[in-house]
Length: 221
Ligand code: SF4
Image (cartoon, rainbow, N blue to C red):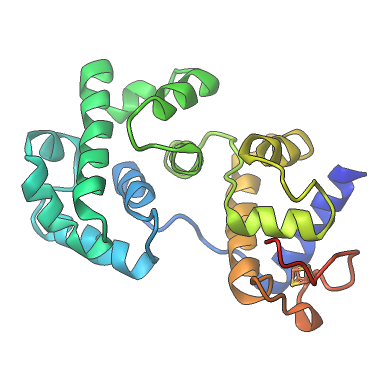
């Protein structure tokens, strides 16, 4: 039942919005950098910070490993919270060098759960960031949860409104095929839905999910 509903939602979103072509980025490391920088800011600001790193020829794990935090912070200033984010980026790179010889390729044979646990142990990397790295940079079948996903799932009565991150991740991961391409597209479509229709004040009348059972008038999410 739930799996059918989730599949129906996906199909309705894909039919309306089409492919979202996530995640923008030319390399795995650029995607990881974007996932860390996008916390609490909009994507346009992240793009400016990434452009600064690119034009300084510093967007590789090795270059960032040898860069000090104040210099990195200055380059990523447009992304906001740049001192904190510089430390987070350095923490990720330090973990990569201390454990995997600085090579993203060395993560390839690691079990996804082990890799997820290691990412979550890095200071400043939370669930959404870790799962974005796993899915969009490393191609692992891990469903990314965010506020948009939580809102849609609760309003469509797929889960209790107070469900936590892991309960939401379990809802999607256990009821869909373990397909990273599907998870990639599904999350991107939910973000589009949340931005255009399922806002705090829902715009149900023209929404692609309007015909499905839902609660639209909730002040809780
Ligand atoms: S806007 Fe309304 S119909 Fe669309 S996803 Fe949100 S609650 Fe559902």
